[in-house]
Image (cartoon, rainbow over all chains, first blue to last red; front, top):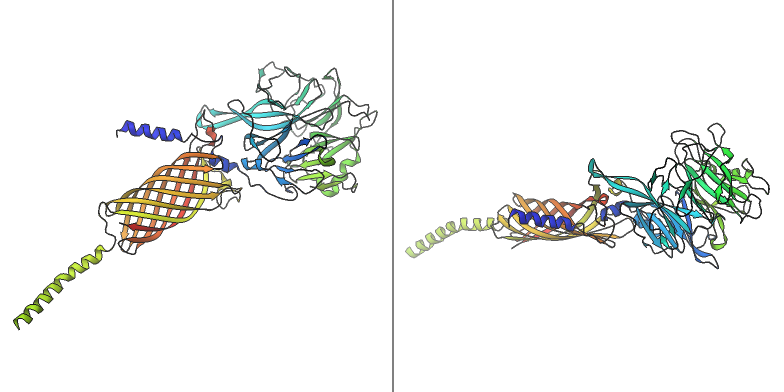
Length: 409
Length: 208
């Protein structure tokens, strides 16, 4: 055996190591794998930032409720059966960053991979993405009723090798795709920012999305967009703090016949980068599919007003005819918070001060928790959920103690 | 009388002459090896997963034993080696090992290394202390994934040579399993890792 034969043999053997049945490295898979914790109620220290509902019977609204937010995903089959959470097997692939539902398929981003399921129990690899795209987040696109979510925005990360160090992989925010009942969009949504730069990598950190029937509204890191399916436009944002992160979107449309405040787009914003201000809640009348340039200000948080300045998701409370807004605190880490705020909607005006209900949860201790998501579940009869970023999941029992309506689930 | 003297002389001569032969035979009963001698080793013991290291040098603490409960559990291994002595204290051979350890959710990680090994024996009668280095490849399987991974395995042990045929002792082996992935493959290059596993085994060597 001469040296060339020996080296060739070694090269073949080394290359054979890439012949792997699977899409993830084995040791990397184990490294990312999180232990699935089985518990009656959700882990009381869990982070909950995403909820989704896979309705398998549209007549009875029977289905599966999914929760995720940084560790395992949890699931249960009936929202009114409290403390009956099980763990989802998708968590075996690693941290479950997000869950969502598009059509009759549930999707999850776990351990850097995209997985799908039609029953909430059995998960398989999701649709393939373009080379270099790593799944990062799933954002539900809510309909004007604020509840149903049968479409998703898939946000990806782009990875590439550092040109200065071939052993280092660099990640950056990547592209956004549309996930519908028909599957994954073939091409990413291209955002064109106001400077004229057209790139799929323009501003892909989407925090919320809604569909009013003619436009999709996307709240991103720097801009509010509306997208008609082929083109995106930056919505006029007069009166908005500049360069802030948008946190939530809700479109109160015609389903809410109890109020004349229909066709209003509400936007919440986070903290301006590098400052402790910038958060607020804004409203605009929507006509002919586009929001008015003149946005009204409902509140702007400041560090001195004892109001949170980072606002997140919205949820319409049909029972109280009010709007809930998730909040975070102004100081410290992003895990801190002040619970949620509630604004009462009347037939002729929108209250500009939080209703007393905002503080009803204080006795339960929820007032000190940052809120990761708000969700209404149709399944099993319907419950309002509040997911915290550090203290698990709570449900709203409107028939319970009015001074403490939130119960850990 | 003469016959008696001759018999006594012969007895003394043969007896004295036989003593060195007996002593030499006693020494040969133990661990003096010659080229061509073979040693068949069977080992059994626990396997300790130590951690995974990315190719840029960083360790994932989540799987280091004693640091995080979510990592791999202590597993077990069973191995067989066949070596050929080239000198009294040096042997070459190869081995097959099977290791298993449970992951965070009780899925079994299987590693089957096939290695060739060079072993030096430091001898201090009736004990010997083999020190060796193995190199080869491992079949690694976890759930539905399987890889064929380059492997290094330095080893050290201590054996008591009970007889010329049997030795019993302990070994410890560090299994260094490389999983390189390359750009353009089905697995991203960022998933490249080096896995470290230590096994501690009781062993029996049959010399023949």
